[in-house]
Length: 300
Ligand SMILES: O=P(O)(O)O[C@H]1O[C@H](CO)[C@@H](O)[C@H]1O
Image 1 (cartoon, protein in one colour):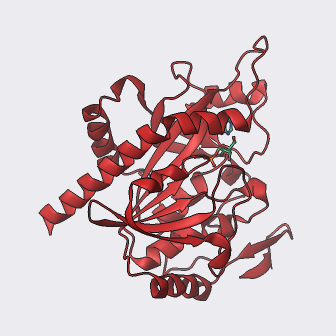
Image 2 (cartoon, protein in one colour; image 1 turned 180 degrees about the vertical axis):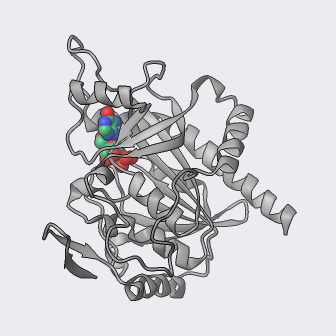
C-alpha cells in the first residue's frame, strides 16, 4: 500500500496490483471456498451472511492490506460460506470516504473479489428516501446512480489505470445489470414484496453529515430517488473490472424536503430500520443467489 499525491497534492493511500494479489492469495490459502458471488452488507445488514452454511470468518484487522470498519453497525468481518451449494463471500460492513479512507482503500475488496474469481456482486446499503412516493422500509433496486463526489474529482478510478483490471474510460451506462434487476424483481414478486419494492436512482454524497434541506431539494430536482454515503465507488470499480452488479438500497428514513418538518434523521434510527428489515432482505438475497446457482447449473 502506497501513499501518493493527487494533482492537488493531497496524500492518498493506494494499492498496487501486487498488493491486491498478495491479499487474494492470502485469503485463498486460508479457505477452500471459491466464491462466484460476493455480497457487500451495509450498515446493520451484516445478518445477510447468516443464511450461509459452512461459514469461515476473517476479521478485517487480520487480513493483510484490509482497512478496518470504523462506522457503527459495521461488524468488520469477511465471511465465506455456501448458499444452496453456491460459494459466496459476504462483507459484513464496508468502508466510506467519511472514515478517512481513500477510494482505493474503500474499493480494495472489490478487486480482490475479482482476482478470486467472483463474477457477480450484490451491493446493499441504507439510504434516505428523496422520492416523495417512497416509505421507510421500502427496498429500492438501484437502477442507476449519481456519483456526486466523482464530479468533484473524488473518483476511485483517478490515477494510473491498470489495464489488468479494465479500460481507462469505462462505460457506466449499464452499471447495474438489467438481467439481475429483472431476476431480483421476479424473486421479490414471488416473495410477495411488491408493495414495498421500488426501483430508482441512488445518489452518493460523501457525508458524514446528513443533507441540508436545500441539498435535499437539489437532489430531488437532479432526479435522485435516494441518497447515501457509500456503494458508488464499489460499483464503479466492480463495473470497471467486468463484474455483474446488483444494488439494493433499504430506505431507512425520508429525507426532509420541508423546513417545517421537525423530525431529524440520526444513525441509530437508520440502524434500527435495518434491523427490522434485515430478515426480509436476507430472504431476498438468499433466494436470488439460489436462482443464480440454478441458472449456472442449467447453462453449464
Ligand atoms: O451506506 P451504508 O454504509 O449502508 O450506510 C448509510 O448509513 C450511514 C448513515 O446513517 C452511512 O454510512 C450511509 O451511507
